[in-house]
Image 1 (cartoon, each protein chain N blue to C red):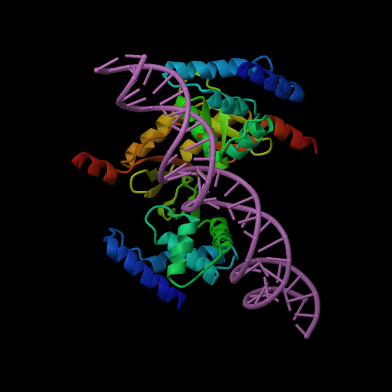
Image 2 (spheres, chains in turn yellow, blue, red, brown):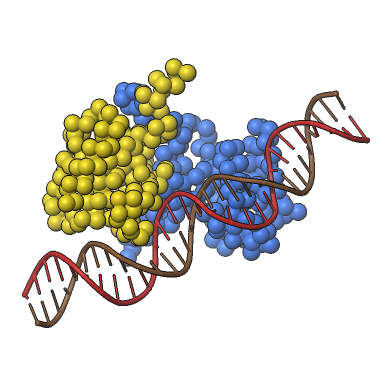
Length: 174
Length: 174
DNA sequence: ATTTCCATCGTTAAAACGTTGCGAAAGTAA
DNA sequence: TTACTTTCGCAACGTTTTAACGATGGAAAT
């Protein structure tokens, strides 16, 4: 039943927006997340699945309280802590990331660019969309710079805000 | 009188910690901030000065509510919004920075490394200290990478957390 | 000098984000 | 079964940030 819900949610969200990559349906993304959990011997519980599905169904990033609201609208009324615990587990499993600059969360899309090293997150200030771009050389340079000032870095990702191509083009039309 | 207070605060904080660069006294840092405001035709009000002095007197970064508390201890009781408004102005003037990953603020130290392009903030997870390291080439590379995926970046600084040399050495002793 | 204007600040309130503590339930292992 | 660990529900609380609105005070225009 949980799976049916996620499929339904996906159809609705992608259909409504006429998403270009509607081919990658939400259920598949959820399945990939499930695999990630299994690989690490972590439990992909119903709650975690629901939370993940909401995040993955979102274009751009989503805050914890919005997840809370959306699940509530669908009949699953939760306390904030439950969502945060699920978020922690999802981050732990590596299937979502936290966008520090917006206190929000988005589904990992590493699979879209293979696994070519650590990514930079480019987050559009207009539409909220987030793209992950592999940038290992830049991380290497940061590490080198840090070492040069005797600092031991612990960087997992970097965030860059700006404007995506779509929004830039839209702005030009005005 | 405001100046006297800041001088006193500085003496206390640097003296207590036996800070190495006690030579750069707080009052001078405040004066530099004042100049930054004047250059931009912004007002360095008493409130902004007090807030700035608290931030500048802090080793590492400080949260808005801790600023609030410290000022309250000194007899200036403020509403949170007042602190946030001052913080906004100080960021606007470029004399402090926000550490996104910790929801806290610290005084800009650009002058310590000349003005050689945009800095990366290296923030120590152990001691909370923050150092600014000029890293324009890395910003350039990020910009290039962004452009290559048709994204218009708007990066001012980057944050790297990790461990500073002092804390690493201390850890080794254990 | 008086009016006009705008930035700043005070005050109240609430929104947005995140955590603690405790105990029940459900999965795992012996 | 029993014991153990992980997850979850629940209630309250703590932290960070913003909104709305009015008062004040200094600079500029008349």
